[in-house]
Length: 126
Image (cartoon, rainbow, N blue to C red):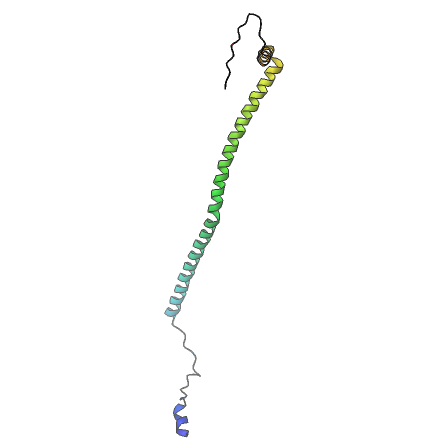
């Protein structure tokens, strides 16, 4: 049994007492350069991801903005038409209140009156 123990024993070469050797300067520079390249690549990927995230959030809002602009244009057109109608009605009201000839024409038209000797022609729209 002592023979088996002798063969399984390791020889002490003194490697545990020696310090680990440092990598050479060239190896360290190569490692530093590769880390710098990896940092640049990681930064570029991060920038691309941020741009994609912004684009994903902006595009739906952009479409909604265009829809709201179209709605605003139609609303402004309706407002312009309504203001024109109000202006027309205002002018008509002032004519009714102030213009005697207009009052006579309007009254005769509504009440179906005419002056003796006058010929009235009516065109009815259907």
